[in-house]
Image (cartoon, rainbow, N blue to C red):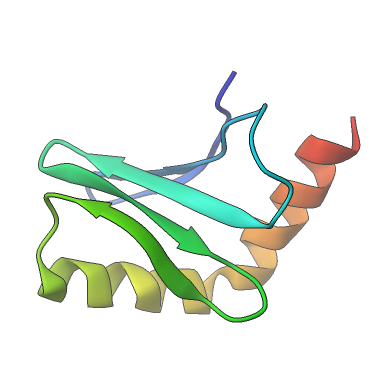
Length: 79
């Protein structure tokens, strides 16, 4: 199961249910995908096909919506 946290433009922000415990978010779109750590700071973990410009934009979205993403993480992984 990989619940969607939210969508932004053509990007889907989501989690994989059975993955590592360090807080992070996955992002996918038709052009590629990425994974960002949320702790201890927001940082790119993996990138497959996304340009540096797009990655900067996505990091900005994560920074703006970090509280929402963390709340969704805690709710999802508490169950």
